[in-house]
Image (cartoon, rainbow over all chains, first blue to last red; front, side, top):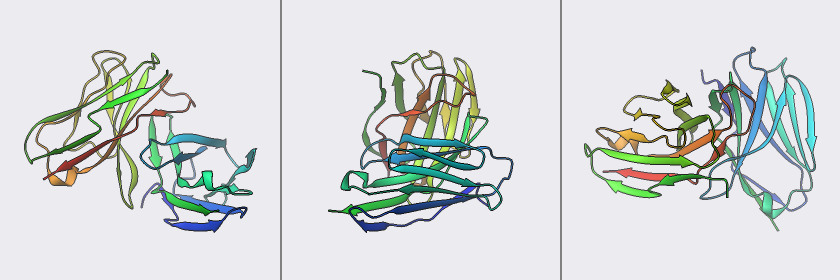
Length: 110
Length: 114
């Protein structure tokens, strides 16, 4: 079983829609959860990270962790064409070893 | 400008011909790492380095070698490349090992092994 699984997408939404991106993980000992954004032909960049359960908000982005179901989500409000990218969830094991999801490609249509 | 630089950006080569992908960072970062990215499999960690002369295996180290002789450089070596190593490779660095700091990624090296 993979440490982290991600909905593969792709996802295509109209501008202004609310987007929900999701991952599940296998090990209940994981405490930190990250979301990276990757534009075409570029390396990933860290978008947000959360610790343990609950929500964390940053502008139009909200990261949510449900440890009871081992489920992590990223919500994007008022999505923009500039949000079109691949989104990867990631779990840092001791912050040296990292497990990434397979990525969800998002297209926001103007 | 703070950056992680990978070379080459693109390479087509043949099975068995040794190759090295270089990675250099100008941020004096302690930690560096290599990943490969394949469709449907996401990013998988190959090797990482916590400091000069300190390296450890990631999830998919088979067929790869690394060295960290200087803080700024972390080359990835394929001694005898095979077609299943055709992939998009990323190098990353962060300020300190074992700390919750963002990784800075290079723009990738696309390797095709025929």
